[in-house]
Every structure is written in C-alpha cells, then in structure tokens.
Picture 1 (tube, helix red, strand yellow):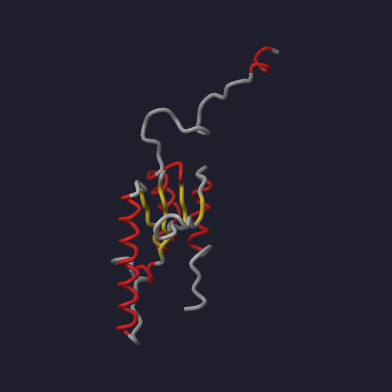
Picture 2: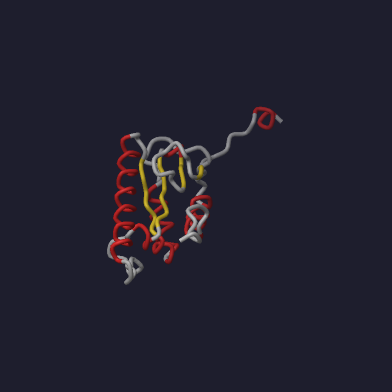
Length: 145
C-alpha cells in the first residue's frame, strides 16, 4: 500500500484536464477544508473528490472488488473510508460547499463525464460569467481612432 498515492493520480489529472478545458480554474488539496478535496473551485463554492472505485466502494461498480484474504482487515478499512467520506461531505455542506464525486470508472467515458461536469457548472441564469460569450467592448482609445 506504500505505492498508493493520494495526490496527482491519473484519474485526478484527467478530471483536472477536463475542468481546465471547460475554462474553470481551481485550487488543489486545500488543507483548510474537510477531507482535503482533490479539486476546489472557490468561485463556484464547489469541491470535487476523485474517488477510486476500489478504495471508496463505488456501489454497483464491477471494480469494487474485495480481496479474498484478510477479509476482516479489508472490510474494516473500506468501512472506515466510506464513513470518513460521508463525514467530510456533511462537514463541507455545513460550511456551504457543494461536493461532487467523480468515480474512477466514469473516466472510461470521457464524453459523458464532460457532459456531467458541464451540467454541474452551467450558469443558472442571470448575467453570464466573465469570460463567456458576448461582444467585447473596445477601449476608449480604440473606439475614438
């Protein structure tokens, strides 16, 4: 288990590439938030956790397997991971943050994941976010020439 890293994993990098291509800017692994979320989008008050199906027990996923040996050890470890994830999600919600979970298996269909993330960060009416479509204003110097 020493070879298992918690930061900059391949699934996390893939999600970061998608978010960046969508024009979203973020911070990584903020220590002041419960669970040290993988991706933090302060402007949207949203955090993204990129969970591995095996370690975080993605229900109904074929990658959520359980080792055959030392069953009690693994079950206790998995139960603790799920309980910790739940506590962190509740604490973030109480602080006013929205939490999204991206499962490792979702990366197999990058287009569907991109659509899901676009829907999660779509503007909810009102004026458009800065940097979105719309005519650019000319500076006074350029307009007067």
